[in-house]
Length: 291
Ligand SMILES: [Zn+2]
Ligand SMILES: [Zn+2]
Ligand SMILES: [Zn+2]
Ligand SMILES: [Zn+2]
Image 1 (cartoon, rainbow, N blue to C red):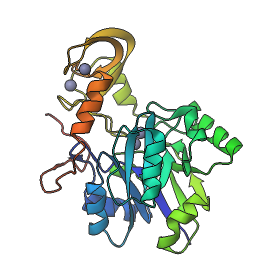
Image 2 (image 1 turned 30 degrees about the vertical axis):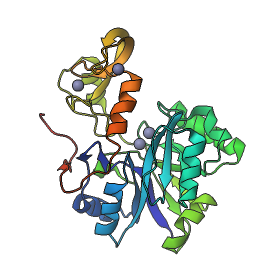
Image 3 (image 1 turned 180 degrees about the vertical axis):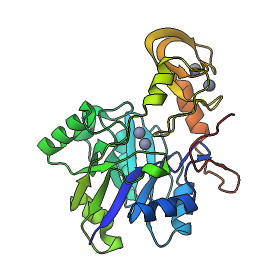
Image 4 (image 1 turned 90 degrees about the vertical axis):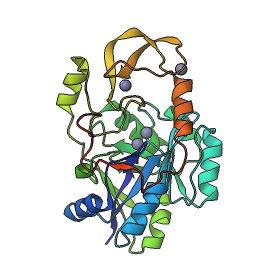
């Protein structure tokens, strides 16, 4: 027997909880999974909380770290990893804590790109279920990983509890204490199944809906109003809500709010404190209807 695990799950994002222990336990049971790695941004508090609440499952305490060159997953860590350090420093810190470093979605937005294959990451996320099976970025990641002799994993990157484990790994070991070592050694099987393409969301995005909850497949809420970030067909002149600088961009929230990259980094830096579990709002089924 092995461990069926989804290694990239966002259970919480910027104070919004997308799965609590009850909905997570129900989903793990329904989908025949042995556990997940909770890889939230900027904190490990919610992962620690879930691990404590669900001792019958394997909850790997992880984090999705914003390195200065792109997202790096940390699996099996014990302390929060600081954001915006160089990839090298980030990986060193993960290893110092006895964790595994994963190049998350290397060829997707915010991925490390080709750099991933020159870095001492332990795993490459060769299949990110968020955008689907046949998409070029997954194909490229797997092909490059194979050529470089790197271990690939597949995961969902989801915030929606009903999709956890849709893509996953089966780790070949009987011993829960051996799971990280088995992953590092590549003793695993990838199950690659895409999540449904959120057609309605994409249509509403391009039709310019002003109230648009973040897509259920990934958490990308506006810092200001909580609506989804959207991508427009054409570039537009936008003003940063924080520093008022003018930029040309295709990305803004549904209400038109935009933040420049340095301000995004400042905002995330501020959110970089431990999440107080007793005070956060729970959205177990996704998103607030109106906010
Ligand atoms: Zn990411
Ligand atoms: Zn992610
Ligand atoms: Zn907004
Ligand atoms: Zn700004």
